[in-house]
Length: 519
Image (tube, rainbow, N blue to C red; front, side, top):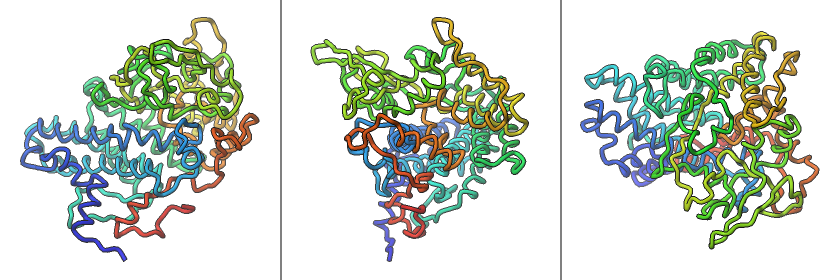
């Protein structure tokens, strides 16, 4: 029997950041007298929401640990994670999953505080109030959209929690999606037009992008004749179309001096040296720069590399997506060249048995540390174009869908220093073939960018099993008797992750019988 007393309540709130986290970090965060009487104070509170988003427990770190490994697409130098979470066999007490759950709810809690206050006040400046409220609604929708896709069900909390009522039971995915759509539509109305938004803050089109993704996820593998969700996805996505543009060279998206705030960015989360994202540290090979502070937490599986090369052998994006050799530095500054897969095909070698991801691999090898002002791009225009291609194909067939995907493929070809013919423009593809091809195209363009977990699951378990589990487990080079090679567990439960034990044990309205099936 669960006994909820004041002590347990305080611990619960502290763990999940619903109240006391704000009190610890900023004693005035929830003080209406101090923060919600004018625009300046409300912006401070809003900054707290963004801080939650970029916190270590969310996009700062644990989001990537949890979702990259459970995407089934990446190996790791972290030996302790190879046999469980990276093998699609996570436990309900996994620390990365637990931290992510708490980090998402910390962000939601802060958004709830801003929303509840600004729904009742105009701050003496209704225009500024709407911009702040619109951002809080967008961020809450963004966080809940992550939550529902990762866990399937979760407590739906839209008001600030007090110690008098700390517990909320699980809500269905339908209820969570309804709230996400409500928040998203309000954000569309309240957020400023593109060009009127501040850098690192969403315009109204970012909310349309979010809603298009929501409707596509809800549509899943249903055909347009079976649901109106594809039409709703189109209605939102087409509003974004033409308002952004692809950068000329795909490689510029990943260089230190050209990656931030490009014409392609729809929603971009600001980083800085003092509050740096951990992506460079996590994706770079150990000792691949003179500072030597990198860990290679994520490395593409062999089938991920092989699939791209087999589909588009001359694709210029390959060299901007994968790194197959690197300079390994010694303390005196000298280095040796390490050649990894595909040059090295033997197994059980931590440095060489897998390729590396290029996008977040450190570019300045002489840097003494990995701290940078790199932003994290959550939504970019190439993704929107692929979405429109998929949506149009579902609604009307492939004839008018080519235009969108071909923009992405043309940019890919033009990203080479020499003339290449791959990836060629699409034409003459049936609706069914287009559906299969576009689903895979997301990975050639967007892999490593934090969306893989979702993109492999959106079309259902059959696609996930074929594209991820079977492709991995049947690869001819793996030796699952070796330490580095891991066999992926084939179990439908992995379509969602387990609800953390700490939530079940601390929340009086959730019991062990509420755990996701199979965990």
